Image 1 (cartoon, rainbow, N blue to C red):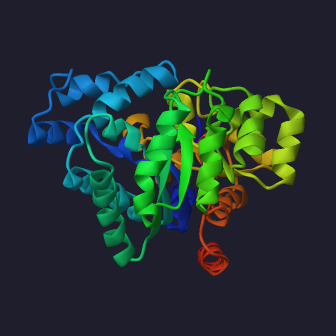
Image 2 (image 1 turned 90 degrees about the vertical axis):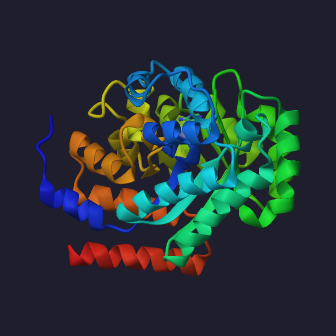
Length: 340
Ligand code: ADE
Ligand code: ZN
């Protein structure tokens, strides 16, 4: 066990940060799920908050996704989407997040009869309010990889009338058996529209999925990517290309990608020269938001201040913002580091 270091924690808390891998539906706290179920008269399979929380004992990605999609079923109105995103953005700001790139999953909602416009209007309103308070934030639309590419194509088409409301597309849900190349056409189409592209790869899936995310989808960042370490040549390539990997330590422990935080590969990834960032993934399900992920991971792995700053710097540097904004973010970080 690591020794608590309040001064180190306070230093980490003060650093301006980017969160590049958070699913907005994964920020729905159990209490909010029950409040929205009551507001919208949606039946839940769990009698109360405690029982639901007790069900958060996952043994792999799929066992989590099954509960997670059930939780998202309480979201019906634009206000629901707004309230969920506003709650996340408030917590993120308290954690020192100055840049948030937020995944959302329209297919989970449109399949239940919720209109694309409802989802985007509600989320967009919360982001506008956060921007008015000084936060830089944007949405990334994610395709569910367990569904067909045709479904993803139809989803992109349905979202394009709201093209200005999101900056990119991503790929997530059940990884194994659904390799990136299944979505080659829809990613090419997204790139034609000038959208940024990212994909979950190498979380449960093999290093080959990271390769095809790079070579077939043309991604600009890899979400997770921890299994790259099984392939020395791929690791060297990712390091050489300064490809950002949005690592989510609490998620990896809770979904059994690694056994404990102390055994997490983040330190080995840093040592391999990879551009790793730390993120929360689904904080309401995995035990904490970005600040907690960073503090506890640094403590468990015995990372130095310099290593922690490198991780935070990597996140700001990998943000999808213009060069001047990125430079301003990095200058804010260096000022915070200099202030100690
Ligand atoms: N959706 C939400 N969290 C996810 C994860 N960690 N991997 C794949 N899909 C997800
Ligand atoms: Zn994720």
